[in-house]
Length: 151
Image (cartoon, rainbow, N blue to C red):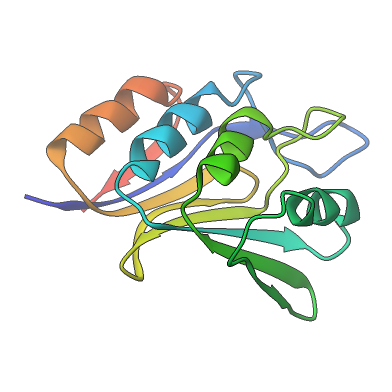
C-alpha cells in the first residue's frame, strides 16, 4: 500500500524576522529525510526567491554540468540530474551565515514524477506514494509535535 503524506514541522519566528525556524532548534530531521528520499530520485530542483542573491550565487558556483536555470518574476529555479557534488552540498551546507535554511523549496523527482517535496524553508513536506517503511522513517525523525496527515 502507498500513502500520500503531508506534514508541517512546528516553527517559531524571531521578533525581528518572519523566517520560520523549527521549534526543536535544528534541521536534523531534514537531512535524514532528504538523504532517504535522495536514494530513490534522479533529479533535484531548488527554488530560491530572487532576492536571495548569496544563495543563488553559491548554487551557480557549484559548476555542475547540465544545470537548468529558470529565472521567473520572483523565483529562480535550478534543476539538475542527481550529482554527488550537489547532493553533498544539500546535505552538508543547508544553513546560511545566520543559521537559516537556505532554500525555499527542494524537490526530488524520479522519471519526472515527484518523490519528495520540502517547502517553506525545510518546514513543510509532501511525500506522494510513500511506502510503509517511508512512513516509519519519517515518523522516527520528525519532532513529536509535527502536524502529520496520511491518506
